[in-house]
Image (cartoon, rainbow, N blue to C red; front, side, top):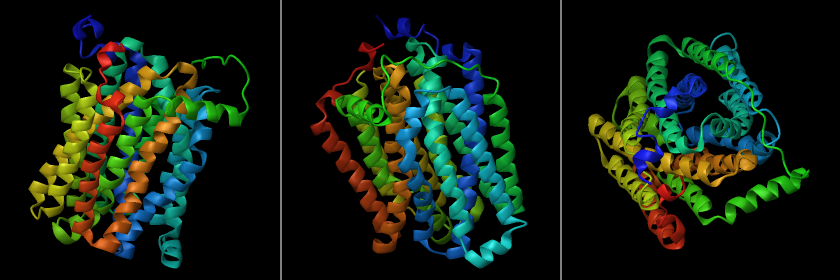
Length: 418
C-alpha cells in the first residue's frame, strides 16, 4: 500500500475534523501563553539575580512536582474524562499567570523581601498542572483522530504548537521590554483564557474500559512494563530525553542575549523563537512528506544534526548567525518530535494512552526542565561556552550509542504500522 493511499493523498486531511481544529487552536493559545510566561520569568529572574544557576532553578522548580505525580496523572487520564482533566489543568495555569501578574504589580514587595522564591513557588504549581495536562492531551488526541491520520495529526499538532512557541517568546520578550512584567503577565492570562474557552467546546469521550480492576500500584507497573518491554518505545523516548538533556541551551539564552550577543530582552525573545521558527518550517514540509519510511534512521540523523547545531551556536558571536543555527536546530528537532509522537500513538492501545503518555512526558520533562538545570549548573562549573560545547558533543555521542544499542529503533519503518 502506498503512502499516498494510506494518508488519502491529502496533507490537510486531519484539518477537516472540526474537533481536531478546536483542539489544536486551544493548544495554540495555551502554549502561546506558557511560552510567553517562560521567557518573561527567565528575564525577570536573571534581572534579579544575575546568576546562571538561578535560571536552571526555574526548570527545577517545575520538574520536582511534575516528576512526583506524572505517573499518577497518566493513571487518572486512563480512568476519567480526559477533556475535564485538560480543563482543570489549564485553569490552574491561568491561576499561575494571575499570581505572577500580582507579584509583578501589586505584590512586588514580596520579591523585594524574598527574592525569586515567590516566583519559584508559582512555577512549582505549574509543574503539578503539567503532570495531569500532557497525558490527557495525548489521550484525547487519539480519540479525536482516526488511526490512519495519526502521523498527519502529529505533524499539524507540532505545527500549531511551534507556531505558538515562535510567537510566545517574541511577544513575551517585546512585551516585557516595552511594557514591563505586569502587562506582559496580563497578556499571558488572556491567551490561556482563550485556550480554556476553546477546549470547553470539545465533546467529552469515554475512556476504554479495563478488563479488570487494578490497584494504583498495578496500573502504574503495567504502564511501565509496557514501555520498557518495547525497544522502539523506550528507545525513542530515551533518545529524546538524553539528547535534549545535554544539548538544550534555552535556559542559557538570557546570558547569550545579554553578555555575548548584546541583544537585550527583545533579542532574547527572537533567540527563544528561533528553534520554533525552524520547527514550523519543517512541520509544513513533513505535512506533505511524512517521515514514515526509514523513520528510525531519520530520527537518529536528526538528533545528531541537532547536536552539531548546538556546538556551532556556542562559538557564534554574531546575532544573526546564532539565530540561523537555532532555526536549523529546530528543524532537526521537529523531525524527531513528529516521529516520536507518531511512534507513541501507533504502538499504544487506547486503554493505556494516559500512562504511556505520562512516561513519555517524564522523558520529555527530563530533557527540558532537568536540561535547564543541567545547563545552569554546567555553565556555573565550566563556563558558558564550554558547557554548551560539552552538551552538543554529548548529544552526538547519544545518537551513536542509541543506534548501536536499539537496532529495532534504527531499522524502524512506520509505513508498515499504519
